[in-house]
Length: 77
Image (cartoon, rainbow, N blue to C red):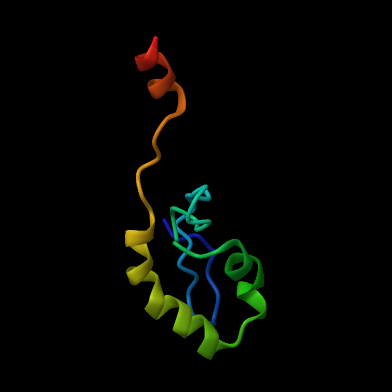
């Protein structure tokens, strides 16, 4: 099913509609953009968007598995 709301004539957004910001890397775990990049995306030049798109694959390694949380607290008891 085509999503007309998310389609545009300019360079595509890398958004995959999984919008969760990693607490340490400060990147969206879905598209790997920073909050600033996400909010500025529609105002960026096509060249700047292309630069970011090319850089996104290299950012995947910056996301590490979160440690702690509920499972870690339960394990300590």
